Length: 289
Image (cartoon, rainbow, N blue to C red; front, top):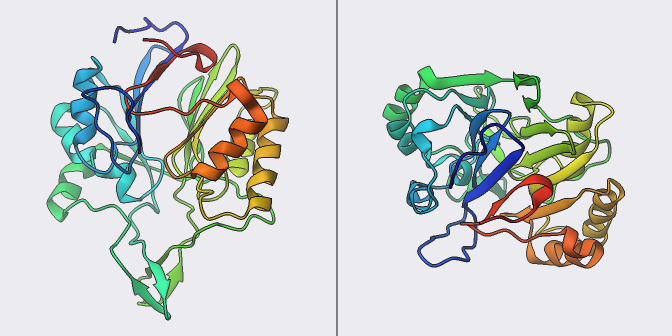
């Protein structure tokens, strides 16, 4: 994969839940490599170091990445960062200050199952600490690239899935998912919005991006939308609101769910693209080799 020399935008899926090409592997996770505004960016790092092998097969030099962004503090988006930092010794990692909570589901009033939070060991956390830039509100990486920090949740939003952690006083507390953040890139054709899971709502993510860059439009939305547990009514409402923004491309990934992907495809036609690990795209989400 050759550089775009700072012209336009290109982005490639280093990891996704599905893979389409021979030699590319998949896992339950997300990682996207982006070239834009003269910068090389990494958005999430999958659940493990498997994305590194995909990057090599795709000709992506992770050592050259200028900055990395953590969408939120769950293992399937952060597991590969220790391995990434062994390859790249300079890129800062933008992560929300609340991202290091444990993350469990609640069953019979108790925390249940495996911790879905960041699973770095104490040694790995200590090693990465010097690379971390803790966010809260919006952080501008350049004039046209923003890490949103906490997404402003739309009134009336009801999460499709809830997570819990034990706070400093030992009380079981619902995670408000304030650590969910997006990467927003402004281009001449509009905004490119990258959202890892949209735990606070994909419409909330869109509207937060538009508040940061007023007078702009959504050109491309790449998002895990966490709609796999949503009702048909909830799915169709979200699909309708996305369609109202008339984006050039919508790419539902990772945790969106097959029903919601079918709804988007039915409503948007070729404007909805189902991406796989190994796929690469350019301006307005046009596929390129």
